[in-house]
Amino acid sequence: MDSQKLTELVEAAKRGDRDSLGQIVVEFTPSIRNFLRRQVPDFNNADDLTQETFIRAMCKLHQLQNPARMGSWLRTIAWRILCSAAIEKKQMKLLAGLEDLLVGSSAEPISFVLQKEREDALHSFMLDIPKEDREVLQLHYFGHVSLKKMAKKFEVPIGTIKRRLYAARQKLKKQMEALNL
Image (cartoon, rainbow, N blue to C red; front, side, top):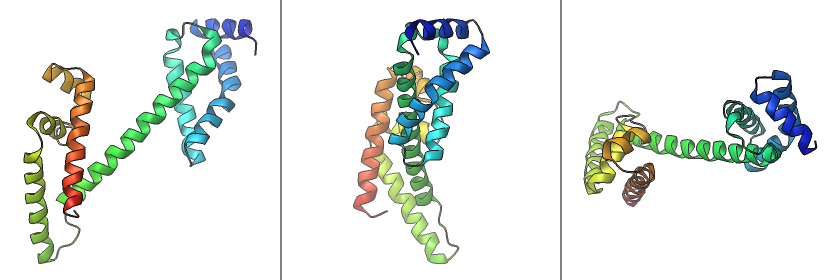
């Protein structure tokens, strides 16, 4: 598609023309889907991420300043969605590990003793984490507070909150691996 035609379609889509938006989706879906399929081993997940990319793009179409850059703009959105999905997956694994540590899967008496030891170990590990990092970890996992709200609460940039959360996770992970928990 030539840049003039694309510019016309984007401008019409910004004004709310659904047919123009549909043409944009038809034009760019194959390249975005292929981009994501190269990154994600499961084609169904790649297709879901492709759909999410276009949904997000529709919501933010007014932010596109140069319609000729539509392809790279869509790939950037797709990449950010992919990164967010990967981070969320890692967080879910860590959270599942913490829950497994806190919740025993057996009702045998020995499991209760082991459960108590795990809880004590986790509590002791948490105390070894610097206060700022520990507070962020506790608010994030146990208080379900967003990064944005934590940044506002602590009056620091979101990047600082992310660094604290990462540092706390790494220290906790290292301590748990050392004891094979």
